Image (cartoon, rainbow, N blue to C red):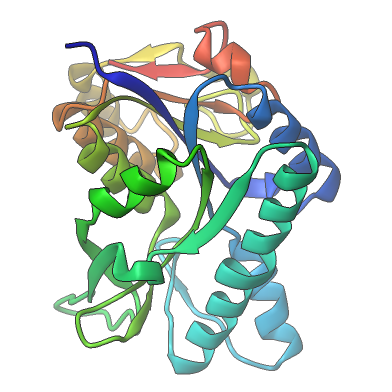
Length: 261
């Protein structure tokens, strides 16, 4: 029996910070036919608010150290302002949407990240996705907009990487549906040189990826996203695409972006 398609789109980068680009992206998102989930980040807005509140911010290898005060900020920004702004915009475009964080109905269970030498604070790593809850909402023809806040089994909120949440949802839902996972941001795709848009790579397989890492011929900041992509493919996700958020349909049609295979 053929599985029903489900598109899981993660949007991040400078798209979230730019009202014009975000509205254009959301208009493009509504044109995708079929069932879909949108996962979003929003790091720069959280950083700016934290600075305005005189809450020091610390980053290690691009990851935010989330102390108790920063957790309040990211929860307000991710699960509050950004999430509801996206939902309101989609609803205005006749895309009936509902905003969720991983804590809602406890549909994403996570645990506090443990590291031998770095205390990441209230950063969470995903343990499980409740697919029954997601499926019931999708079956109501609702478009889900998911913020990257999760919780542990004791009710502690946790800040969790949005790329990882998209990947984990894609993996979990792949048992029931045919998943296309898209990581969309402001670049054309995976770049060998972050400063050269024309250095993007149309297709990457695992052997190619390992070779590029070994030879240091790939932008280091892209490696975690690709690790997520290959893990998703290995777990049964049908297709993973990384590319420019300005035209989602071109990404889905294979006319742009980097395809992970």
